[in-house]
Amino acid sequence: MTLIIETGLNVPGAESFATAAELTDYATKFSKTVPADEAMQEALLRRAALQMNDRSEEHTSELQSHSD
Image (cartoon, rainbow, N blue to C red; front, top):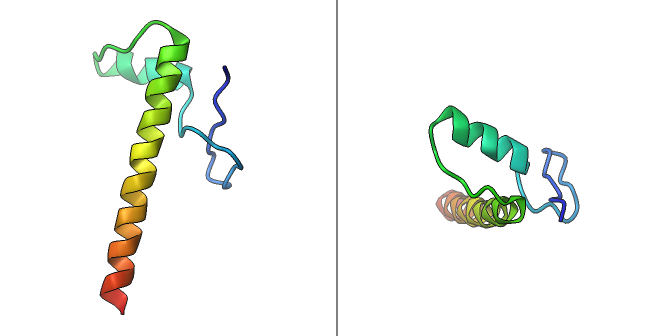
């Protein structure tokens, strides 16, 4: 399954901020281990994007509460 990548242009249905190939390149560069299976890599990337989006929403809410 192909990931829909967010490019900074608010891509509808975006699921990740990076491709599986970018994940494996990053892992190699920093001596980290990621699953060899691309479907599992994509699952990791989707979970990471969800976490990043949640943190972003928390930060935005916090900023808005301080400006009130």
